[in-house]
Amino acid sequence: MRISTIAIAACLIGSAAVAAPEATPKPVQVPPLPKGAPPNFDAMFGIFDKLFPPQPDPDPARLALARTAAASMWPDGAYGKMMSGFMGGTLEHAMQLKTSDFAAMGGKAAKTETAASGADLSLHDQVAGKDPYFDRRMAAYRQLVDEETAKMSVVIDPRMRDGLARTMARQFDARQLADIDAFFATPSGHALAGQYMQLWVQPDTMRAMFMAMPEMMKLMPEVTQKMKAIDAKFPKPAKPKDDKGKAQP
Image (cartoon, rainbow, N blue to C red; front, top):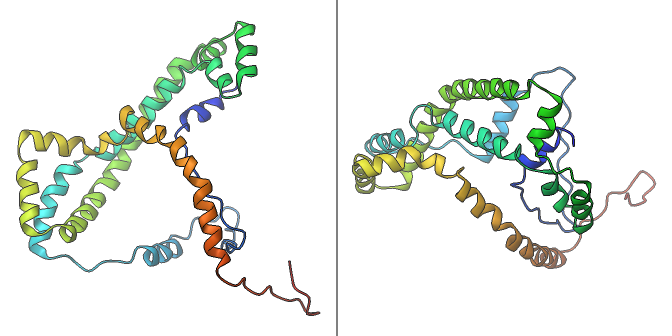
């Protein structure tokens, strides 16, 4: 089994897509960048500003209270700790997946064939058996990830604190913000605020989201039919014509 199966294991947390009605307009064609050209961030931010318009400054008193709460919820190093722990933990468990785990996804026949072969090694054992330096290499990769996500955290953390504070200053009034700050100042509140981000990438939380997928998938056909019914209520747009007056496909 090739090392590319790591990607399969690490991406088990998928997402369901709703089939679009036939009359749904084609997506806007974005012209490709010239080869080797850097991203045009000014253009990207211009589009982003239209999707998420800049907001006016919140009330200064409420913003001051909100900054105290945001500092507790997003401490320095929070992003790096979350991403490093999530990626490292996911890869570690992915490497313990065996041939039979992947074969089970191929149905009963594939699972039976794998069992008959007698080779049910973990992905780690398969790769390490061919590469005596695999574990040391992976440890070096893990250290690199920890170091680089820590650097990213220095960039992201203050920006996220500011964004959270501004949002909270609009969502909550002064009394509510004062109550939140008071709770976060307690030992229990401080513990919750400091670990809030990590809660979203812990195994139980991720399992809860992933295990909901089968039920969510059952809703998709009905949603698709409802979308088609809505589309059928409105006249179809006229097809453009070519120079000879014939409708284009």
